[in-house]
Structures are given as C-alpha cells and as structure tokens.
Picture 1: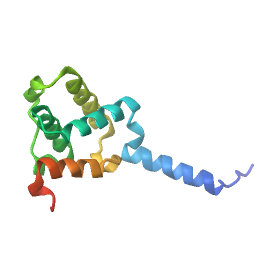
Picture 2: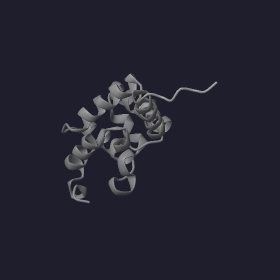
Picture 3: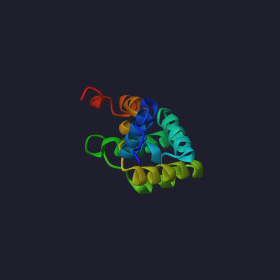
Picture 4: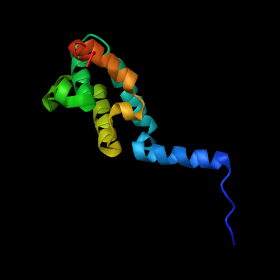
Length: 122
C-alpha cells in the first residue's frame, strides 16, 4: 500500500509543530503565560518589587550581561508575585529556552531599557 502524499496544509502544520517542539513554545501553559505576563507588567513599574522582578527576568534573559538573581530577594515580595516567579522558574526549567525564543523579545527589551539602559545598544 502506498501512502498518499501530505497536502500542503498538512506539511505546514507538521513543520509548525516541529518548530514549536524544538523551541519550547509548546511547553508554555496558560498559567505560565499568565504568570509571565503579570511579571512583565510588574517589572515595568517603579517599585522595590519591580526591581526584584526585573532582576529575576533579566537573569533569565542574559545573566552574564544583566546580572544574576539573589533568591533571598524573594523574601521582599508579595506572595502572589513570588508565586508567579516560581511558576515562571518552572517554565524556564521545562522549556530550556531563552525568552526571546518563545516570543517575548520585545517585552524583555523593554525591561532592559527600563532597568539596564546602558545595555540597550549592545
């Protein structure tokens, strides 16, 4: 029996699934995306919590350039913000991807602009 060739739409869908699997984009659940969106919004505010959130996110973005993250700084956060960081940390571990490779390049560039302006032109 000869298999029928895939139709163009099927080929495109198969290729998109393969790319999503390879980039980790398929690993982002709605709870993870919601937590990340809340953290991104928090990081663009001007508060002590925002600084901690920005430090966490930028350590994921590029810890060599943006600096690391001190886990004891979590002690200064509201419980929901700390829970969101925990959720996003799970995403980082599971996806094994940098934020730009899962569709968040512009959002992270805005955080670099706000908190590490000396790095924006690098």
